[in-house]
Image 1 (cartoon, rainbow, N blue to C red):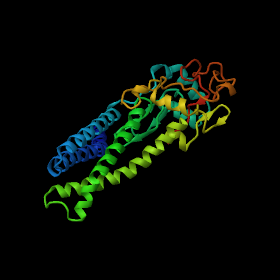
Image 2 (spheres, one colour; image 1 turned 45 degrees about the vertical axis):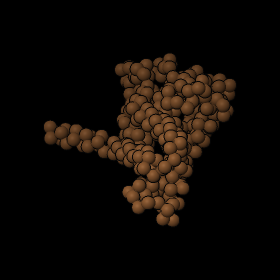
Image 3 (tube, rainbow, N blue to C red; image 1 turned 90 degrees about the vertical axis):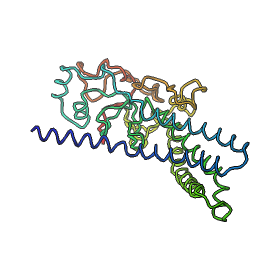
Length: 313
């Protein structure tokens, strides 16, 4: 038994180390691109001092925003349901006597009644408030507490790559027309352009997709599986209109929109819906049991008509 425990613990440690490989790769690539652009391209290859100052100032501004938003996405802990959502002993006993469907099994496994838009992450083995997805590139769950940071990370990294590709293009053309001196800088120029162009394509599609999700007030999970309400599934149940959808993620104060500072609206447990006036039973107990001793009764975050006991994949 002790040997098995040690093996399991060893596998868990190895897994934790491997989870950081994508993040380390991005960090090394970012450091290499900084050296290639700031030193080899702008200082060694560029002769115009005024152009050097302008390009390096703009570059380091984008670099700083990229690193700041990436750091916040990685190291902001995803929010979990508070203690009030956890089942008491009496509630667990009541649920265990109920017919066990998928929803009941999920509740019993997590030992809590999940708030609206909360999902269980199989990688983190935790329930995450307004979970969007688990991102291996940041080794973290993207949810209510860091979704804005993730969007800004995509935006700043895309601008960073586009800026490098645009300002490196003339030197890349010179490289192929033999217009550059035969120094090691020419290889850095080729690396910069190919890497920046390649990542610009992938980042633009990913960023565009998440912009679409924000405009519809959806998460990635909700885009693939519509949220369940009392009247049934509704893919547009949380859609409030473009302006209000944006404010749900970025907040009311526009001066914070482009900064990786938390400004999202709400508490991550309850969300406004476009179905408030259509559902007269909005504040009633969850529909999976009609018992007056329903363990979900009175739980915060159940005020919306969305049912949150969905089975995770």
